Image (cartoon, rainbow, N blue to C red; front, side, top):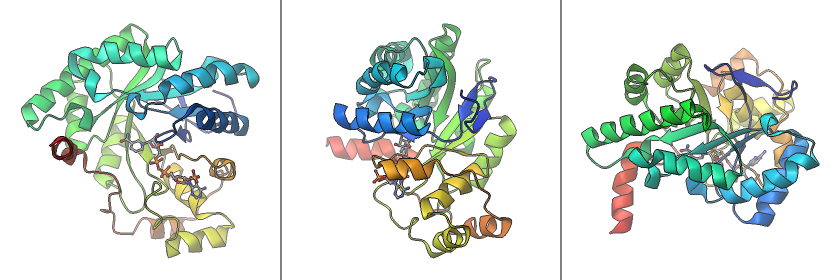
Amino acid sequence: MPGTEMCFTLNTGAKMPFLGLGTAGLNGMDLILNTLDDAFQLGYRLIDTDASYDNEKEIGYCLEKLLPKFNLQRSDIFITTKLSPTDRGKRVERGIMKSLRHLNCDYIDLFLMDLSCTQTGNSEDDARLRNLSWAKMVEAVKHKQVRQIGVCNYGVEQLEGLLARCRGVRPSVNQVEFHPFYRDRKLYDVCRNAGVFMQAYCILGCSKWCKMLRNEHVLKCAHELGKTAAQILLRWAIQQNVGVIPSSRNVAHLFANRQVDFVIPRHHMINLSTFDSHQRIGNEPEMIHVLQRFQSE
Ligand SMILES: NC(=O)c1ccc[n+]([C@@H]2O[C@H](COP(=O)([O-])OP(=O)(O)OC[C@H]3O[C@@H](n4cnc5c(N)ncnc54)[C@H](OP(=O)(O)O)[C@@H]3O)[C@@H](O)[C@H]2O)c1
């Protein structure tokens, strides 16, 4: 990773930027090429995707075009992707090979398994599928197809279960919804004590939730520090050693989101951490298989 990037050292010793580019909903070659071109130009070095976002191929094409343009090597970029539910269990290797092919890479820096990916509606089957998928991900680390493995949306119970049966490879990251209106302090402590890096999604409220960017406390803090509401939300997480992957297709936002090398004073940090912390934007991971069943009926 370039020396100027704010990085966290993962439990493997690898460096991972605190701030990356989320790509959910970023589809279509022109949009992806323009966004990644702007992002690399501005210094973004982490890309977060998912086999299910349907943009890995385009990202792979952009890497081929843009790395030489910015005089970057593959090793300068940190790529995260995630297991598709269709490749869970015995099919994990197939999923990883597909992502490698699409992303045009020899290795993936971080490969994540989402809790919802292994949900069947039966908790014993779920646990078995999680264990089997993890075992296959561990094999992929041994075969050097992926450098780090981790999880998304794991709660305390699932994470502790995984740590107890991780087959010698501990999860490096737990990517979860985390922002002033939704934060699980116990999970935060478990991650921290176990050396699992917490990475926040929906840190700006996604596109559907403007409440955070318009919150009076966030705006007051922003006004006092001469920052934007988005910068306060991003910095609030980073200041707690939590990574962020905001998505944006707007170059002014992409630029502003990287200007987070400032300090939020303690009284504002406390104030921003006293909101009702149970207002989740995404679906409860435990509910996803139920929703999928309803949608398919
Ligand atoms: N593992 C999981 O379960 C999971 C779930 C959800 C998301 N994710 C990952 O996390 C990433 C981030 O989540 P997200 O994209 O849902 O939500 P987000 O980053 O919280 O919000 C993105 C929205 O914020 C706007 N925005 C960005 N910068 C802004 C700024 N400076 N000022 C005002 N608005 C701004 C963007 O609009 P503009 O385009 O106009 O800037 C976009 O509509 C995803 O892209 C994905 O990679 C993971």
